[in-house]
Amino acid sequence: GIQVEQSPPDLILQEGANSTLRCNFSDSVNNLQWFHQNPWGQLINLFYIPSGTKQNGRLSATTVATERYSLLYISSSQTTDSGVYFCAVVGNTGNQFYFGTGTSLTVIP
Amino acid sequence: EAQVTQNPRYLITVTGKKLTVTCSQNMNHEYMSWYRQDPGLGLRQIYYSMNVEVTDKGDVPEGYKVSRKEKRNFPLILESPSPNQTSLYFCASSFLWGHLYGYTFGSGTRLTVV
Image (cartoon, rainbow over all chains, first blue to last red; front, side):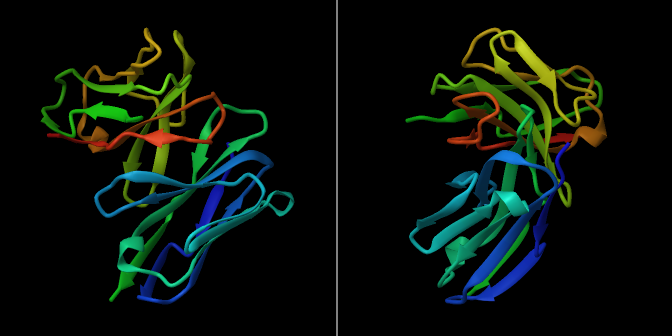
């Protein structure tokens, strides 16, 4: 299967700070999605981004498929951004979805 | 409202007592999947289904069964639960197999096996 590594594993930010989360994957992919798991456990779609750059408010994401990584940017962080951020990929030849182990983000007031 | 509904949300059971966790989606999605989430291990796929009557094993299928008799439902069956199956379980669905776009998760089922 595809190995998906996320960094950093843990991140603590002061409210208002910016951060960059990284997702590296070990093989070619044609699907990539970023998710946020809030402190109540709910998993929410953030970006479907197999390539290129997208922005949604304070969040943006960039995937460079040829170099096998994706970045999630959080600007002006808020306490509601706390939780775990996962990236997930699908390989070019498979039906399985592979998740990284996540980045746990804590934003303190 | 488009959603994936899992039941129950919480379940405590004893070793060996068969149980079923239900999953239903109202989006006419083809692809459905089950995951378990354990601390430090992220989300691991148990089984997935590409359509009715088409299921396949994920990374951690041992001790679990699934069925897909209708498009909307994808129950997870533990025939003889053991304590190492204590975990947080998620069902998810997407419009098309092999496609993460619009991937929607249920609210999760926290299972404890004693």
